[in-house]
Image 1 (tube, rainbow, N blue to C red):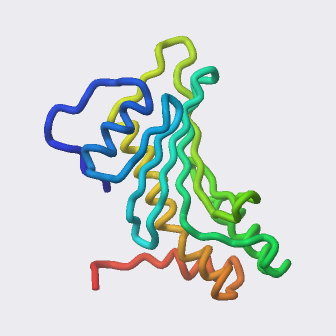
Image 2: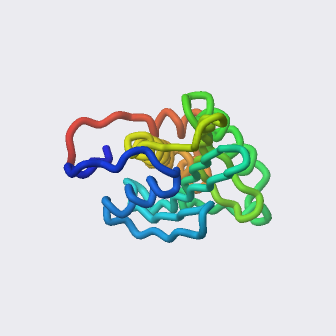
Length: 174
């Protein structure tokens, strides 16, 4: 769980400004690209994830993407492996309450995406707690499902077996 700083959190603000404040308070490496994009790098349980938030002012939509770092080249992968990857994506997405995973055709990346519609009638505002929840959900889902994707693509497991094996809950730490 992402711990928010103990000092007084900033009030609701422009979505990317609040995300920038969150990333800064967590000492994460990030880069702001104008008024409509911010990218942060965070170490998850299985990989270093690239978190990208895109703000679409006209639609009042904030999109949060988490690149898992898994790359599966469509041209190099066997058709059976591609079919298995699509199946594991479908099985995982059935379980998600928010967001979804997808395999991007442009670069072969497996990523998590979630979109939030902010009130179209008001000035768009995001709270620090909302920002934390969005970012935490993306990281948690990536950490939770990363092994299942690896089991299918590189381990040769069936999607159902991969999902079952990846969802084993452990107690304590080694």
